[in-house]
Image 1 (cartoon, rainbow, N blue to C red):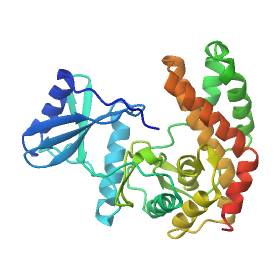
Image 2: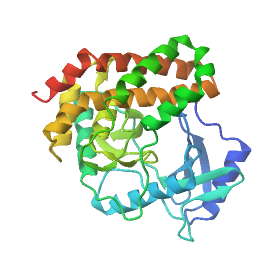
Image 3: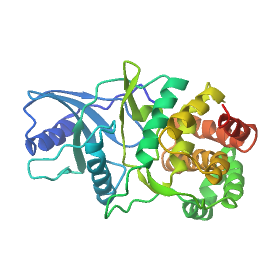
Image 4: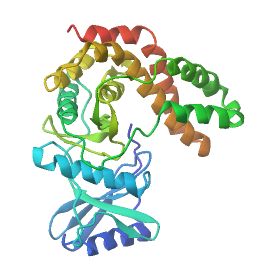
Length: 321
C-alpha cells in the first residue's frame, strides 16, 4: 500500500545523495525528487547530466543483508531478469556511508504501480517462477526476516504491551498458536524475492519491466513467493479473487511446476505470509503507533481469517482453472 506522502528533500538528504554521486561517475546532479514513502527505506529520483537514477537510503537492513542483495542481483543481471540493478561506485563498492545514512544507487526504471488484474498477476507469477530457477549464489546466507521463533519471542516478551491493544492481542496469540502446528514446511527451497507486492513491481505499457526491492530476498521454501504474491495480487477490494490467483499460478507454472506437496501446502503458506506480515506491522506499531499501520494490521488479520477458511478452498480451486 502506498502513502500519498513523499520523501522530503531536506539539506541532510541532499548532502547524503551528493556524497554518493561524488563517489560515482554518474554526472552532476540537476534535480532530486522524493518518491512515495513505504514502511522502511526512503527513495529519491535523481536526474544528472548523465541520466536518471534511483538513490535509496537503506534504513531497514544491516550491511550484511544489503551485501547479499547486491550479490543476488549481480548473479541474475546477465539473465535478463526484469529488475532495477545496483550501480557500483568508482571504487567498486556499492554502499556510500554518510553521517547516519547508507545510500545505494540503482537504475531508475520508468513506469507505474500496476492495477491488480489477472494479467498483472500472471506476469508477476511468471517472473517469480523465473527467479525460482536461479541458483543460490555462493556465500549467500540471507534467511527469512521472520520465522516462528520470532513470533514466540514476541509473544513472551510483549505481553504487557499487547494488552493495550485487545483488538490485536487475542487474535495474534490464537493465530500464532494455530500456525505453529503447521510449520516448518519441508518443501523445495531456493531464492525467493519474499515481498512481491504491487508496490514492488514496475509496469510500463501494461508490461512488467522490473521487480524491485530485493532486500527481503532470502533462501526459503520456493512457494513462499507464491504465498506472498497471493496476498498482494490475489485480492480485489479485500475479497479473494479466483481468476487473479489462477493467473498468478499459471504464470509461475509456465516456468516451474509445483509438486503435489507444494500445492497442498500453498493455502497454509499464504496464511503464514499474511500472519507474518501482520506480525511485522504489529511489532512496528507497538514501537510507534500510527493510523496507517493500524489499518494494515486489521486488513491482514481479515486475510488470515479467510485463509484459514473458505479462501483456502479458493486457492485450491485455482489449480483447476
